[in-house]
Length: 247
Image 1: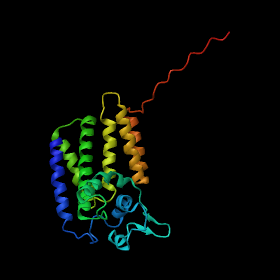
Image 2 (image 1 turned 180 degrees about the vertical axis):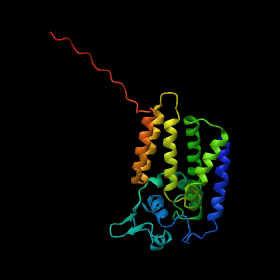
Image 3 (image 1 turned 90 degrees about the vertical axis):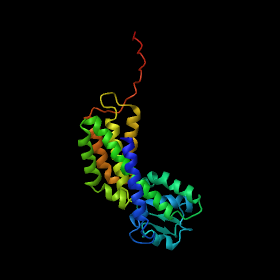
Image 4 (image 1 turned 90 degrees about the horizontal axis):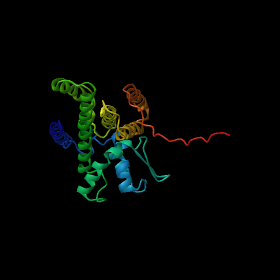
């Protein structure tokens, strides 16, 4: 399964880079425009501008499709989006920085775009793999049925669009986190739930809410599912001191 997932990732990552490579960086169809730029700005904003507006040009704001603003009065970069998406994009941004040279660019080069395109496909592929592993433990079935279910999720929902066409938006990252939470619930099915699975579930749930606070409803559903599956948070036993006998 791992080899198939890797080949799947390579094919769609290459296809995504090829597709977006035909779109000029300043075109409205660019994958780091508007909302996507609002999520992404934390990364170049931190590493290239120190989260200050002084060095953010008006042309960069236009390039980002006004997904963020340079608040020059308070010398800060303003965006209405949280940093959760940027946290998951960070490893790929750092890879682009290492290729281009740390601090050598403004963080909006073609290489940086390609890094986010690879990130979208990576989290899409990883989410599908985690769902496959969870389903195998929850409802074991034939490989044919499992592949059909994954194909319906991958191409019968909008996950493909947000992984391939709009990798800068938050949706595919939320998808991955929900898949991670599901995997943590069912990873130890038939055995006591490991502490690492509990912490993995907590990590995924926290980022789900950070990325999109309204998705606290999804976390609530996941918590209900966890308890219905007999998965409760481990409680450390505390030895109580013996009471002295009363005279």
